[in-house]
Image (cartoon, rainbow, N blue to C red):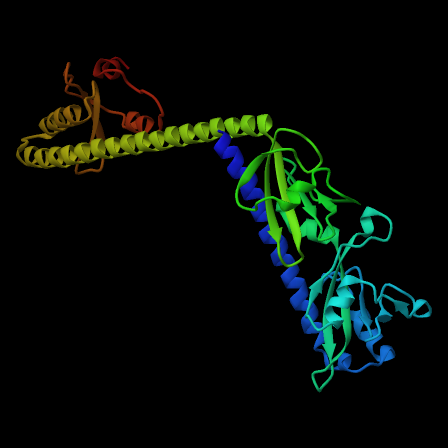
Length: 366
């Protein structure tokens, strides 16, 4: 059970890491494509602004805004700011410095405007002129809440999943942005990222199963952890659940097999009955061909049908040359080879859902 619990914590950390990296790569690739739009190859803020405003929307994932920074580190265009608020010196930002130094696209430290709802991930890529020389930096702000919504593995509470930014601060906890804070157990940031360990959790909780997985695209760490007792109990519960499902599946399979067997058995019985009926009809045909009169015909038919259907009473209707029907009755245990003048008893028998006559004697007494 402990091994199952440990594997689940490791799996959760790895999946959150994988999906987060995929999310970031997709947003970066989108921003690179935007940076290659010809109108952004120049250095005219007035021309750039309408284009960037059209691109700063939720559909592209840049709901936090898009801006352009010149070579001096000044934000000249920013869709989240009014024109009169520009330019803004952002030369001290890690993502601006990284790109201007010619080191390519970069995902910076998570930033906030004061509340957890305004946490955003800055992504920066270079813009280049027609000559291929860098002209500035295109920056997009991706809301941290958008990441959490796009990666379900970040939203688990059992085990708990936290994301530590490249700044070393916890920024996301169980799918919810939180006020940036340093971990209580900083040693986890240096933990071996292969497998899981038991010890003190990110916030100082003891006796935890802990797994760490990196997100290299942003230099983040995913930390998944769960109390050892709770994790083991949960693993036991899942084991019982798996056994119950297996038992239910086995019973369902057995039930299906029994039903199939019953159907096959019924099909087999029908086949035997059909063969018997065909044989009986052949015998009946031969015997009727040699019957000397209608009474003999009726008697032969009653004998054959009584044996085929194991019936106590058999009604046989015979039509003569004039078109009149006469009903004859009889059975295996008693024989009343008599004629009944009313054929209505046959009609009643065809329409009835239950027993019409229990014996030939009943018919005779009517």
